[in-house]
Length: 331
Image 1 (spheres, one colour):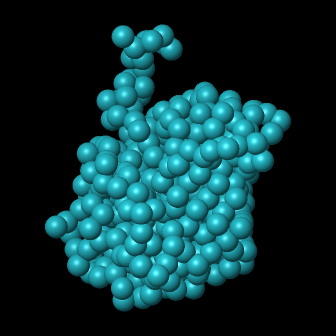
Image 2 (tube, helix red, strand yellow; image 1 turned 135 degrees about the vertical axis):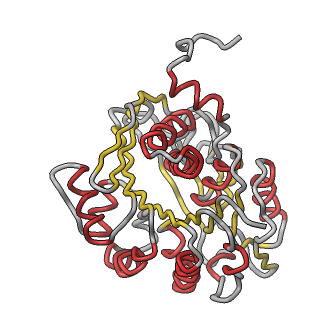
Image 3 (spheres, one colour; image 1 turned 30 degrees about the horizontal axis):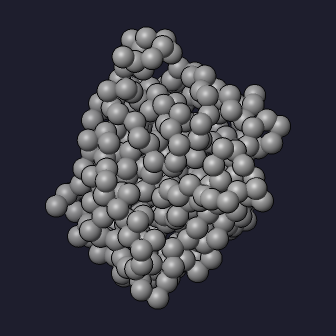
C-alpha cells in the first residue's frame, strides 16, 4: 500500500488538571494522546489524506489507548512497533492564564521509542510510493538510536523520491543547541520542506536576519530547501494570540492572513499547521493556498482541547473564504 503521508515519532499519554487547576490542586486528570508526529498524521487523515503513523509503544493498555486514538481518525497504525518490556512516555500539562503561563512536566525517559534500533522499521517497504514523509526534531533528540532511525528514514525517503517535511521543533529539555545543530545540519540535505520558527532557526541553525524573509533566504541558500515555512505567533496574553504563517520558495514570499485566536489549547497547533500546509502542497498544489490552509486549520485547532485536531476540512475552507457568520451559534 502506498500512502499520501507517513509520519514517525514519539507519542505520549497527556495528563492535565481540569478547569485551569494547578498540579497541587487537582484530584483528577484529563487524558489525551499527544505527540507532534501523530498529531500531524491525525490531522492529515481528517483532511482525507491516506496517512500512516510509525512509532514504538509499550504493549500495554496505555499503548493501546494511544494507538486507538490514531485509529479513530483513520490513521494506519499497522506499522507501530510494540515492546512488552517498555512503557509509554507521559507528559503533564498545567494550563495557565495571564500572568501565569502554561507549564509542562515530562516523564518520558526510557520510553519504548527510546529503545528503537536501526533496521527495525522496513522503511523501503513502507515509503515505497509514499508522497511525503514527515518527522520533527523531537524524535532524534530522544536518544542516539532515535537519531539513527530518523536518518534511516530521511535517507530512504530521498532515495525513493518521497518528499520530506521536517519540523525543527526544538526542545531545550531534550538536547542542547549544539547537539541539535550537529544532527540537523547534515540531515537538512535530505529535507525538502523545512517548518520552523524564527526562534528555533536561531537556536538550531545559528541563523538570524532582519526579518523572516532574510532568515528563510539564508536557510534556502545554505541547504537548498524547496520550501521554508515559518509560523508566527504573537502572545499578548496566554489566552489571546495572533497566528499567521509565512513561506519562502524560489525567491517568492507567501503570507497567510493573521488570525486572532482564543487559546483553549495551543498544544498541537503547530502540528495542525504542518498538516494543513502538507494538504495544500500535495492536493491543492499551490504554495499560497497551502500557507492559507495551514494557518486557518491551526487557528481552528487552538479552539479544541487536546493535542489532536478535531477540525473538519469544511470548517477550514469556510474560514478561508470568509463566509463564517461571525461568532454567533451555528444553528
